Structure formats: structure tokens, C-alpha cells
Image (cartoon, rainbow, N blue to C red; front, side, top):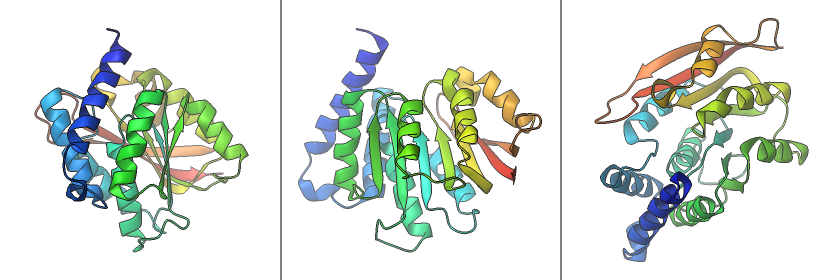
Length: 239
């Protein structure tokens, strides 16, 4: 079984586990769904964005003014983090409505994307969190061309896919002009397995002479196993 097949098999097992419960156990309860996913992931050694990292990220996202409304995620997997982002955006905007509050999550695997959609629907966030299948860069370009993303319209970008794509996909965001001053860029797994080119880039402030400059912080979170750092970069200059 390939690595990709193993990842999909664990996703299917998660789906079966959660949907074996009575329907009202998780329906319309996004934080209960996130906890259930991560509890199962801990037992099954699945790579999801764990609760301590979500909380550290929430604290950073809450600093954005005005309150963030548009979030893009590179690497959706089973939707745990995307559900959290949707819930956070709604909370920060004091709304149960999906109007102008959107999370776009990009997932390469059709199997994982379908499972993520089911879990997002179970959490009651299907009108806020949108799953796009295929290579992340292609999906990003498509929704930009469709007008779903505007120039200076992305408040938060989250990188949690294959680490070698962190830097080129960040630079694609820059080339499309998606960020504004104060936008946050969050990256997981920069300590392990590591994203050295990405880290060097944000720690040096970005492209020399480029349109965006960053300040970045490596935030340590509690972790029983695996990577514990969340790298949070803030756009301090956008031209």
C-alpha cells in the first residue's frame, strides 16, 4: 500500500467511526466534530492539525483587524482544521450566517475531499467551508479567476500540504496580490519534516524588493508526539 493509499484508508476509517454514532452526536457542533477527529487521529496516528495548534492559531487570528472573513487552506485532508477555521471566522464576526465569511480548502485526493465535505456538512459549515479538489495552485488560480478571491482580499493563508510546495504556493499568493497589511500566513510542520526554503524566506522578510514584507514568529505548542511548532508570519507591508 502506497503512502497516499494509507492516508486515504485512515480517512475512511475516521469517516466510518464518526458516522457510526447517532446523528445528533455531532450535528451542527463544529468543535465537537474537530475534537472527535483529533481524538481518533491521536489513536490512529493520523496527521491532523491538533487542538493545541488550533488554539495557538486562534489567538493569532483574533488579532487581525478588521475581523478576518476570507481564509485559504493548502492541504485540507479530512477537514479538521478547515472546520475549526470556519467556526473561528463565524465567532470573530459574531455571525451564524455564511454571508461573506468563507474558508477555501484545497485537497488533492478526491477520497479525502469527499470525506472532508461529509464532516464539514455534519458540523453545519457547508455554506462557509468550501472544499476544492486538485492541485492547490490550480484551485487557487481558478477561484481567483472566478472572482471568489479578490486582490488584498485574503486575511489568512494556512499551509499544511506537501512542504516542498509551501514557498512556491506562498509566492503564487503574492503574485496574485491576495494579501493586505495585517494578513496572517500560518504554516505547520516547519520543524518536522521541515520546510527550510519556506522558513528562510519568511524569516528574511520575503522577496527582496517584493510587494510584501513579513515578520514571523515560531510558536511552540504542547505536543505528545510529532511536530510542535506553528510558524505565524504577519504581512507588515503590502504594496
